[in-house]
Each structure stands twice: as structure tokens, then as C-alpha cells.
Length: 287
Image (cartoon, rainbow, N blue to C red; front, side):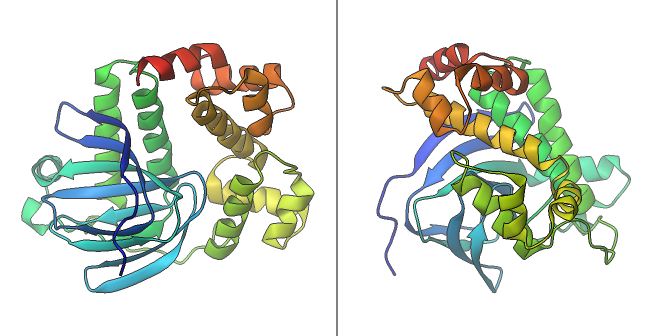
């Protein structure tokens, strides 16, 4: 089996006061063996769909990771990953077991009873929201201060324990929004067509449902209307393009799917709190 053929790219790193580590990284095509670590890991996929396989805790997984898919790897769990393309970009959060046990003890639960669940390509809107806020802070130079980052990190730890550990209540059989396979198809289509025509009609046809039904089901599954999700993804693509040299603002706007520069600037200010020019300065200074 071939080993990784390119170089791992560390795009950003940070650490909270409590020792929670964050890493924004891009893995090349190939195989990556990860030893059992003392920390619990959360990996959230970013951007374009990525085909991958994983073997951990005696189970083999395979599938296409789409934007927002979450892997949770318990401590002391070795894993072998095979990235089948160059699209594996993720935000990795690393939690010391000592911190998680301290939080559990504060809840009046015996820390020795704690067990983190092994998850592969799961969905959790709250974890996504918190993780995207952490990512924005890292990439923007921590405009809200380190105390804010510490609070986000502890909020993620709390969510991890409440929903992805032995403390979580039994799962109930409920269907909310698009099914897993349909949601993956839709999110993959959005990523691939960000610069093109993402009309409701085209997107709903990918899900195989009518427009009205699609709008309601997408919002249940993702937490926001489809048009807001598309704008957020276009803003993120524009931000990534701004980190590259040699692209004009007009070219960035077009490549990200915006009608014109002012359209891009308005949404970037609203979502990221900075104009495209200011964001480019921040990205350039952080290199």
C-alpha cells in the first residue's frame, strides 16, 4: 500500500489555556498511520469532498467526507487512514483526557466510567458551529481574544461529553431533514458548483425532491436555509483564494461564485467582519 506521496501542510495552529490543541491541516494522497494518542481527537472535514478509508478500533470505514463531516477518535486508539485524493483538509481538535475527566468530575460523575464514542463521518450541528468559530478566530488573528477561544474550546468539550460519550442519553429513532446519503450528495454538489449555477431547482433535483420539500428538509438537516449555507461556503472559498498571490479581487469574486466584487465584499464583511482587502492583509501577515 503506498505511503503518502506529498507533504502535510499545517495551515494554522493554536492552543487553549487548558491545553486543548487546534490544527488546521491538509493531508496529501496516500496512507497515514496514526499511533494511539493520549488525547481524544475530533476531526472536521472542510471544503471539497474527499474519498477516504480508515481502519481503527477493529472496524473498517470507507466513504466520501463532505464539508462538516466529523470523526471522533477516542484516546489510545491507533488508526490507519488512506486518502484517495488531494482533498483531505480538516480542523483537528485534541483534548487531554485529564481535562475531560475534570469536566466529568465537576458534573458529579465518576471519571473512570467515561468512554468516548468512536465516530466516523458523523454530523453534529452544534459541534460544527463551535468549530467554525474556532477556525475563524485562528485565521483572523484572534480578534475576540484568547478568553473567547478558551470558552469555545470548553464548549466543544462539553458537547463532546454530552453527545458523544457514555454520558449521552440513548439515541432515539428520529428522522430530521435529508437522509445521510442525500445530504452528502447535496453538500458535494454545492462544493463542486460554488462558482456556477446553484439554483434551488438544480440543487433540489440532486436530492431528488421538490423545491419546497427540499428547502424545509435542508434547513432541518443543516440548521440554516440553503441560500445562507451557499453564501457561507462562497465566502469561505473567497477567503481561501485571497491567501493566494496573483489573483485580482474581481477574479476571486468570480471564482467564488459572486456576481461582482461588491457582492462578495458585502457578505464577507457580514460573515467574517472584514472587507476582502482587510482579510487579504490579515492572511498575508500570518504567513
